[in-house]
Length: 91
Image 1 (cartoon, rainbow, N blue to C red):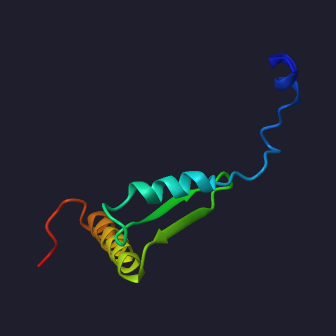
Image 2: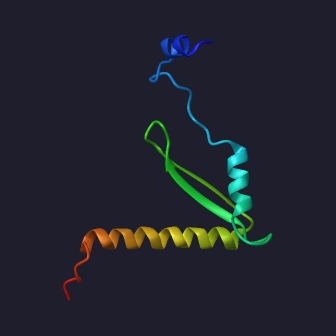
């Protein structure tokens, strides 16, 4: 198939839904942590349809709870930063 024919057949509005390859998620998991028992990740992104997606994998519940707590703190700090916009809160 030539590039010219490919471009004629290409329809950007009719794409299959993108799915993160399992091999990518497995590799991300392997890169996390330093030893067996403390590996894990929580990945949030927006898919091609604009919907939020969250993938998570953890060696155990303790790691998963730590990831959740880290995300919770991130969200709270982000919301506080939006409220105060760098100014000291009114006392």
